[in-house]
Length: 250
Image 1 (cartoon, rainbow, N blue to C red):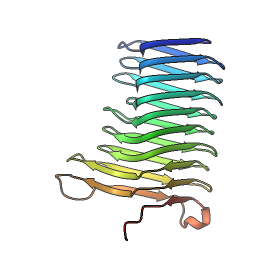
Image 2 (cartoon, rainbow, N blue to C red):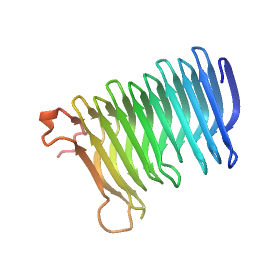
Image 3 (cartoon, rainbow, N blue to C red):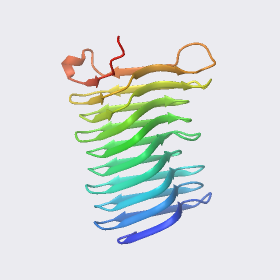
Image 4 (cartoon, rainbow, N blue to C red):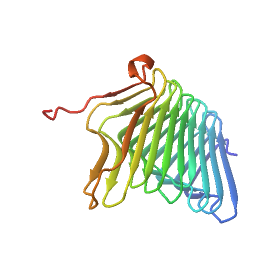
């Protein structure tokens, strides 16, 4: 447990097959700064930041590898800043109770196993690019008033199966486009995005919203993409998705 300031150029938690490692950073002013951080590469690894602690990585973070990784941010004023890519491979990333995580890129499902992202109870995640189901299956759930997922570009199901669900008044924002079910090359992809409950919104301020998009694929047929409102009529339950695409003369 850290209640002070720690730093290292490269950190591995639960890095050896069969091993188990846990790191907890807690309290205002407590910091943990790393260049490269790998959680659960071969064994079981867990990193928890709470009660106003903060952390950062100047290179990249990998949650899970051939093992199982878990990263949890909880409580207001708790923050993690990642200037590079944050990969959730065989693991779980949870941001909750007013905690904030920011990353250059965030990829959920970037290996050979299922991965999950959970944002709840006022948690906030921001990234220039969010990919859910990139190379391997990935899912994300954003729930509760004040919970937010903010990205420049969002891809749900890109070279794999991805799903994103927003519920219970959560919000999402993208500023440069949304792709649901994006094929790359000849690799099949399936994407699903679901908004449910009153007050739940997704706003795309610029760029296309592409559902079932095929990008230079050498195979025939369409890429499965789906956008679902969990209502018979959106106006009755007020679940909304607000998109403002650029004027393309259509």
